[in-house]
Length: 237
Image (cartoon, rainbow, N blue to C red):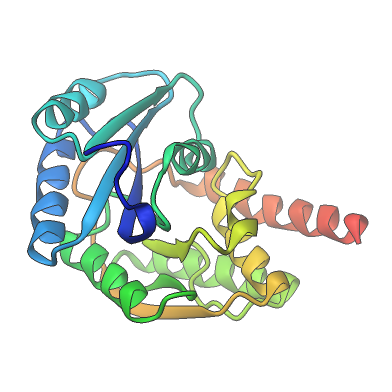
């Protein structure tokens, strides 16, 4: 990796990491192997965010020492949106991607990037076909229905990752949310700016490890957050 490299073909992959010390090394290894097989020129930016409660940072740094294409950015502030934004700020490539690495298989990440390679200038995102409990599936349906109705969105799965986009779609580099609603902000920006979106269906499996922060309380908070975000958007018009 050199400072003078051609970034026009570089793919920057942002991976928010929190309390994933039990599986992040394996995930990073699988991603690197898959990207190498497809001859991608890439960098992986692992954003270890929030108060560290396990060995996540050490595991990521160990991988980065062995492979300089993996970089680690640490921030004391937590939050999905914050980690995504910080990772994008650290990125150097012209093709950008962020994803939930606890749920994204290497083959799914590779599939999204291959679509992005075939369709330059287009936002490529996952449309997860969830294999989970009925409660989780129902919660996802209600959340997406709320988002689609209030924001008039074309996407069926607002929170679906990986999300891949070219740096030339500059408004996506100006996201402001620090919480889970950054994905709604992402898709609503695409709708307002008429950025074309290609949704690719994938099977969403259970987490690789760690503990999901999604529960009834956080779900209700997200539903209310969507309404507040909508009201804020209307006031700004």
